[in-house]
Length: 135
Ligand SMILES: [Zn+2]
Image 1 (cartoon, rainbow, N blue to C red):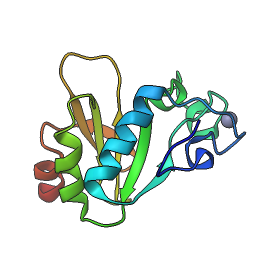
Image 2 (image 1 turned 60 degrees about the horizontal axis):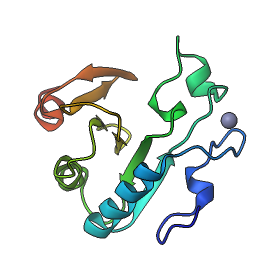
Image 3 (image 1 turned 120 degrees about the horizontal axis):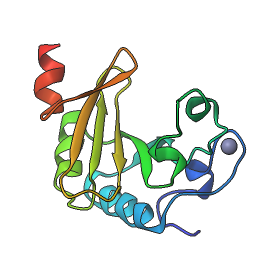
């Protein structure tokens, strides 16, 4: 797994080091990087035994390989959201205003799903910034 702008260590499961991100996600990450500048990867692949996945009733998208949580280094979260929203292959977008990252995933879906994190739980939000500013 060779990428221009991301280290494989950033994308592996942080609990065991296993690799599992999908090729399609890697292409999307590089495309986002080209438009948004440097991105910090909070989390990408998480194996089903990773503590975050293990406490769910069933493992989420991170355990299937199409998801990453990204912190924009060179632009505000809202500007980064607009970059993410303009990428047609990204079908899952979750904004964590408090933690300053955006979850992106390349799940198979006809229409994108968007949500915000409120007190650690995902709440569907058609416009994550509208909801975030009101909340
Ligand atoms: Zn693991």
